Amino acid sequence: EKAGYEHFMLKEIHEQPTSIQNTFAGKLSELEGNVTLEEIYLKPDEVKRLRRATIIACGTSWNAGILGKYLFEKLAGLHTDVETASEFRYSNPVLCGEELTIAITQSGETADTLAAVRSSASYGCRSIAITNVVGSTITRESDSVLYTRAGPEIGVAATKTFTAQLMALYMLAINLGRTRGVISANEAKDLIVGIKKLPGQIQKVLSRKEEINECAVQFADKRDYFFIGRYLNYPVALEGALKLKEISYIHAEGYAAGELKHGPLALITDETPVVAIATKGHTYEKILSNIKEVKARDATVIAVADDDDTEIDKYVDVVIRVPPTHELLSPVLSSVTLQLLSYYTAHAKGCSIDKPRNLAKSVTVE
Ligand code: M6R
Image (cartoon, helix red, strand yellow):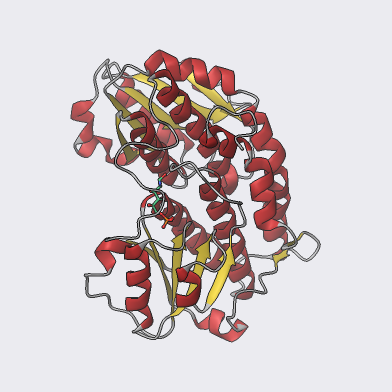
């Protein structure tokens, strides 16, 4: 059932060109510049009146939520908070009726996420669940369900379900943004054209796995790793670090690159590989400065950068390339490169990739 792959994780990484296509199949209208989400039971009036969204999730799904926040704010003008479910459930949230709760949970069974959604429902908030599992508990706890349709994921490490969650968030942000009149049909169209190209571009990333493997092997004996990114690349950094620690047992920190000088820079030495997600966008120059900061502390820098970026080579030690895409969409491609980096690092170390120690696929206890 691994279809010739050594591990489910590798198989699932390779399924992403198809799995994301399944997420958006039948929903994108390039002509109208809109995304049709018939499964969301919110009237246009209610969507216009929304004052805030609260995303509730754990782990990888929480990382997806950070990207969701940036997308909802940029494309739909909707103030968005991202809450860790285990914290939210014991806090005293200030919520009112004209707010939307979005639960992101691949399994639909994470105990903390379920409890947090129940608590937000008690304030009268409308809710949407983004999940991969049809009929899971979260689907009964939410008003609307947006399925990610990535297919079953066996590896404990979330890979194809993560990129499917990102796709669901892009679609929801475009849909809300069009209804709220924040983005034009043409802006939505540009995004839709970009989304449709992603499966082919992921294929291109996958075809470069040997280079990524070489890079992984080179640093597999390191004790600590840093992943840094800014804005949309910040959640990519968080997810890159989570994946690496989960399956390779290397200590990894994901950081908003601008935060480095507020503490963690003290940890950077010539023994610390730093992965900088440096795809083109309005924070590109800023991440270059952060790269210079860590280079000045002798770190080895691995950059994830666009194919046509010729400048980056001057500043870093290794470049992992991704095809250029719409600025908002690059997290999908960068995330696939980092999944491969973690996979090959864990592989080089002989770790139990599909079943990492101490972890379970779905966390149904508190
Ligand atoms: O099923 P969920 O999306 O609610 O799971 C949340 C986390 O337990 C999960 O994303 C976990 O962090 C992943 N195994 C990481 O790869």
